[in-house]
Image (cartoon, rainbow, N blue to C red; front, side):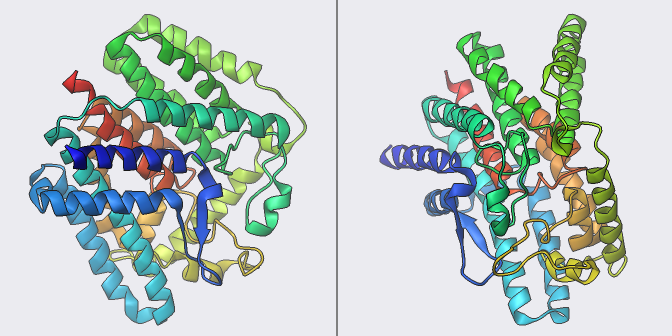
Amino acid sequence: MKINKLVIILLGGSLLCFSLGQLARISIPDQPVFFYLYELLVGFVTTILVFRYRLKPFQNQMVKPISMFFTWLLISFIISIWFYSMNHDLIAFLYFLRLLLYYVFFIYLVYFFQKERVQKSFFMVNLTSIAIILTSFVQYFLYQNLGNLAYLGWDPHLYRVVGLFFDPPITVSVYVIFAIYFFLYFEKSRNWGYLLLITPLLVLSFLTYSRGGLLGLVALCVVYVLKKQNWRLLVFVVFILVGGFLVIPKGSSEGINLLRTTSIEARINDYEKAITIWKKSPIVGIGYNHIRYEKDEYEEQVFYGPYNPSHGSTAFHSSFLVILVTSGVIGLILYLWMLFSFAKMSEFMLLCIVFLSIVSIFDNVLLHPFLLYLVFLLEGYTRTWKKG
């Protein structure tokens, strides 16, 4: 029981560190390598659970698609190491290990909540969501221009909500994932207090002006309504969505123009680069994650360096293109199989996968550490609902 309490405390601490967003980012000097403070606690929790349960969690049915996907990622990486420098391979392998950590964390966390008698752990989830909501509103009203962070590689995102995550697609995804979690628990408990948390999360989602996020929200609502066969709910959802589009502030800034075309052109250009690089190795891929070193060859100007590190040079806008380019057609098929397996695990995972998959057509959110952590952790916490 003492270990259980320690794990819960560490998970709660990781949530608080997560709420700091990019402020808790720790960079390695003179290297394109970084990690977040909460990841240290994730690693600590995973280590504790590995020593406690050994290989027992790997008997779970969901482990097979995860194992096959990461086995292929590793094979693809090993094949690719001969085409890059040792430094490039080392950095790419560190990012592979980081991605692997999240999925191992997920496997052991689900087993922990299923195996142990753990009380409902809502306090830290509620506190974290409230902290994120408050800091987001503070940023929106008092810090509407991130231009002074351009030297760190961040876009200014004028008059938009970005919270402490500094990127609208990531920010809106955090809001919606929390909203899904609270809504499903409200549906189960009829605790109306959770609607008080869902409302500001939806308001903030619209204020990100993330079109991919808003399309994902529409798809999420459609899937939920079809699943429940509740057509009156459909009318209500349409009213909320249309009302949100009409009510959000309009202005002359390109960033808050939902009909803007500059970002569409940039994405098309990014997709074309991805397909060009993919053609170099369509079956096996270039290895996870060698994108930075390939992508820079197609840039007229390299947008990263000691004083201006770009946060877009290490990936493509679409998560699916990232997987396709780095692991080839085989990797993409295995990845889609894994996502499909996740969607069958629970209603929470289904709705999260639907939402994030739509957003990931336009922005790389399915592979982002913030969202992997949040979805996996909250899925673990949903296991406590069934234990009263």
